[in-house]
Length: 69
Image (cartoon, rainbow, N blue to C red; front, side, top):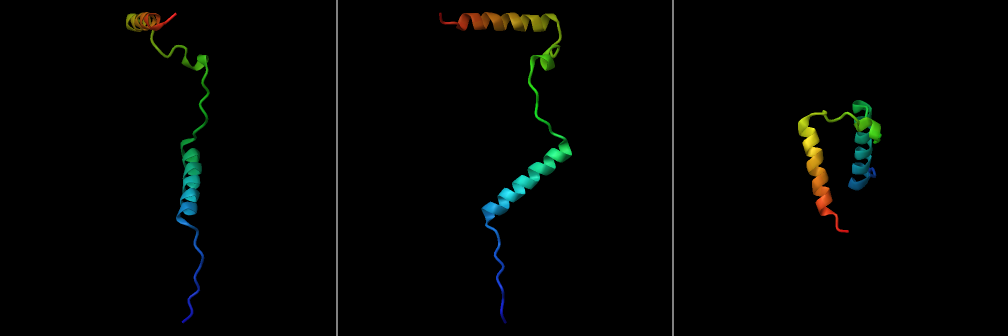
């Protein structure tokens, strides 16, 4: 009864292969694309209402108070 042992890849190599395959499938299924970050994609993201303007004013006041010149 002679059994031949087949050499199996290590757990680390198997995990790396699975992670790579998962990433490829995820990108294919979800259609993920790199996000382009520029100001044009964010303009108009917030409504022009009193609450937003107040938040901008409070943020500006807070930043002005934090400056250490």
